[in-house]
Length: 408
Ligand code: AMP
Ligand code: MG
Image (tube, rainbow, N blue to C red):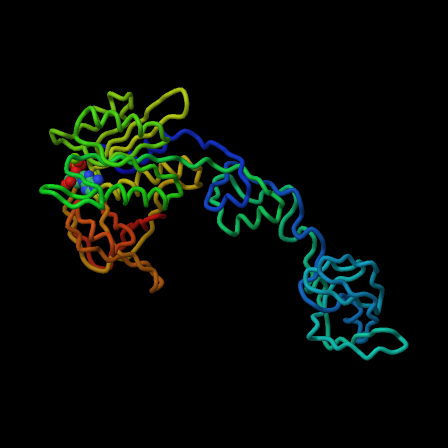
């Protein structure tokens, strides 16, 4: 049976490259850059003052001059008209271009404007010395024209958007978001607002998967419930295959009404794998519908809620991130110290609902009281999973293990 890492690799290999779309920058929050962005201007675009104060030649102050003739005042957005000569200063505000001739700005708190007299406006500088370049930010000091602002694959947060805005990149190429159809299967399912009849349960997986798709930044398309009936399932599957991804839940195990694999095959979806050596989620099915236009990637998720959820986190999220061109698609594993001993009895790689905490400096992991793949309740106090490799053994308190934070 495939290991989790082999299955993740096969999922990644099945995703074709990113489709780029040009969008207005203000619509790009949370999207991923489809190509790298090179800046065409220096930042800052001119030599500028970092403080409100007086622009002078540092050598003047360092040679003992204390009183300077104020020849001009420059506010942010204005342009200096005069060159500063020996013994002169220009009153300058933060963000204003510094005049030629100077190499330092003395902050206003270290100065005293003297009463006007026949010598014009003069300022006394209390500071004993000035460092060349003090409070001056030279053109191009933080960014040089022609260098890379951001690499392809970067998800655009506030900072990235601001960096692009500064460069005047008002339209950028981002990865198209995948549309992800969700189809729950099962004769026992009813909608979440329905009363339960005998033997029935509510379709909680649709709500969960739609939320996970949103969290991943993709576009959910819920399709309701398909019955365990070939005709009904077939018709719903065809609808779902119109999207970039189709997630089915249920019907992929070995029960007599587990019709999903055969109906997917009937619809022309090529199986990539069925079953992974993972707990929960072993019956996972994955395949691709190849067609002239873009393919559809199909996941048959096991119906048990925790299985569906974990398979989404490990495999579906990876595929969606790959589709969106995110720099690192697969889940990030970090290290954490187990807060209590644990007997791991399974020979499947196990993803155990857990509470991860970094508040004490070192990351710790506390396992939930987990009753198996249908135990949704154990996941509501969890924020991630402890990972136990496919080898049964006892883990002691304080042992360091791998963990995965959900949504990362
Ligand atoms: P299946 O994979 O179809 O054999 O379903 C496995 C278990 O998951 C059964 O107990 C189902 O009742 C339950 N299940 C299946 N689909 C859903 C769903 N959409 N929401 C909640 N539970 C489900
Ligand atoms: Mg079923």
